Structures are given as structure tokens and as C-alpha cells.
Image 1 (cartoon, chains in turn orange, red):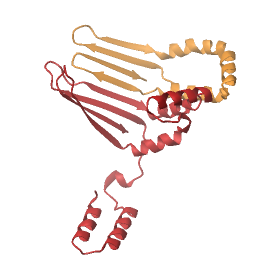
Image 2 (cartoon, chains in turn red, yellow):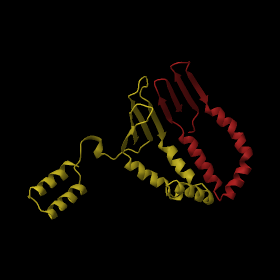
Image 3 (tube, one colour):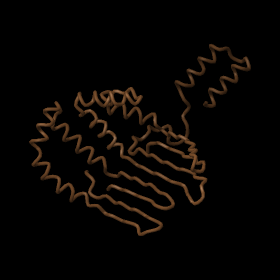
Image 4 (tube, rainbow over the protein chains, first blue to last red):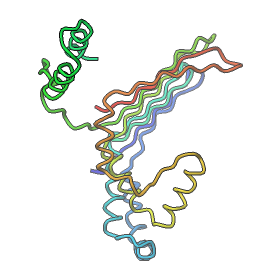
Length: 86
Length: 149
């Protein structure tokens, strides 16, 4: 399952914090037609690089799906940043 | 060192067994490790995440500890390794050459998902202590832990 949402949380002691919900599903929806339009170019690039286009597609999909449940947190007494992909 | 091996070596030093017997005993102990209580005897569950935890203990004035906590799904790492397999041969040679220039004699084509599994198996709990001693900063200690869960 590809990630549908990313949560970015920035906390700052001196200023206002930031809490962002990034709807990744909208990004996928926007990217889908672009990829469809670019597919002939992608196909040519794959053939030029001697790469199986279906395998490439499958691996790119796996990378996108693998992003789910990624969690990055960096905290400092002044600032802390949290990124969560769900 | 585990307890059985230590006992065998003590027996050897006390002259109770000779070197050949001690070797045989050690190999027997290694071949047939005693079952320990709890989860260790059961097959280890497949790791789902790679965790990197960095903790610094700064001695400095108003600075506090810096913490980094990263959880990367193993699925992403596996896909990344597969992605490396898609790099065209010419580009791969260039990457290998660039890495060699920087002192890393490494062949990207040798990276396979099986290698990753082997690496993960070995990576039970890796902990690295780093002492940072900057001229303008107070002396601090950084602990880097890399493990799977």
C-alpha cells in the first residue's frame, strides 16, 4: 500500500510551531496522468538503459510503498522536527 | 565470552583437561548451544524496521541533548537495493569509480537483497560511542545505535 498521508510537525520554542498534514494521495492522483503521458519517454529511456520497463515500474512502486511507516524525529531543546509517513 | 567456554578454559588452565580435550569440548558447546529461557530459543521474527537512534549528551551551557530517532521500513531498504540493480552498467561503473576515488572500493553490482538480509541478521544491536571534541564547543559524547526491530 502506498503512503496516503505525511505528517510534518515542527516545534519551535521561540516561535509558533507548524503542524502540516500533507495529503500524499492527492500527489499520486496528480502524478498518475503525468506518468501516463510520459510513459512513452519512460519506455524509451528503459530500453536505452537496457532495463525491463515492467521491472522498473514494479521496483519504483515498491519504493513508494516502502515509504509507509517511515518515521524521522530530530529533537533539540530549541527546535524539533518530526516527519511521519502513513 | 559465554559461561561454558570460560569454564572449559578454566579447566584447561587448571590442568584438568588437555588442549585437545578442551578444543573438543568447545566445539561441542558451540555446536549445541544450551537453550536459554524465553524468546531466544524460538526462531527470530523477521525484522520490519531499521532503527537509528542518535543521542548526544552535551556538557554545554544552554545546549541540551540532541536526539535523532529514525525508523526506516525494511521494505524500503529492500526496494532501494533492487533500485540499485536498475542502474545502467555505464552509470554503475562511474559510481564505482567515484566511490573508489573516495577510498571505498565497492562494487554496486554486488549489492543484492540477499546481502541485505545477511547484513540485517548480523545487525542485532550495533552501538557506537563517538566523542566529539570541538575547539569552540564543550566536549560532548554522542551515542549512535543502529538496530532492527
